[in-house]
Image (cartoon, rainbow, N blue to C red; front, side):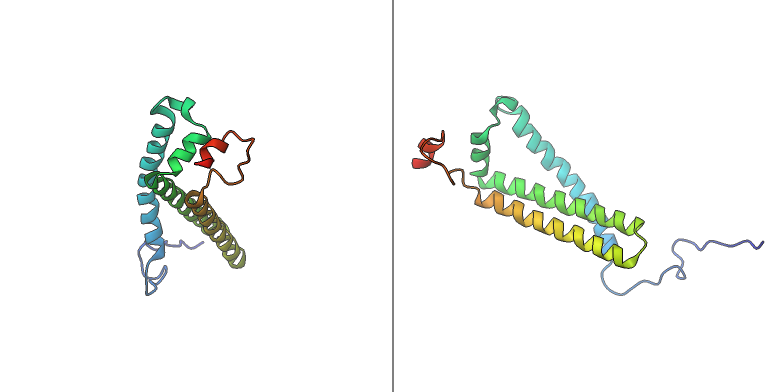
Length: 149
């Protein structure tokens, strides 16, 4: 039985460096930066919604309408949505690359995760920026008076 040697992690015989951007490195950096930003955004979101004002008792449809009427909170929520979905999709891509061995299956799964994330980002952004509390309100609704002015 002959002894085999394992190549050093940075040895050139493992994998030659391809020309162009190192997407794995930028994905790794994105995960760290977006993780820190998400902690700030999420705790800010939780503090405003659950602790400021009258606490959890203030959360109702009118509270959401008030927040979505302000560009600051629209962009806060959209930034949180974008960062979280891209962060999660990048994490799923990493897991797929680590555990799926068949190239065709890996490619299909990575594309499916990317398309799902892109669709949810688009849909969530449209909801935040086109939110209309008066859409479909009828005369017997409790929002009727608010929507008439």
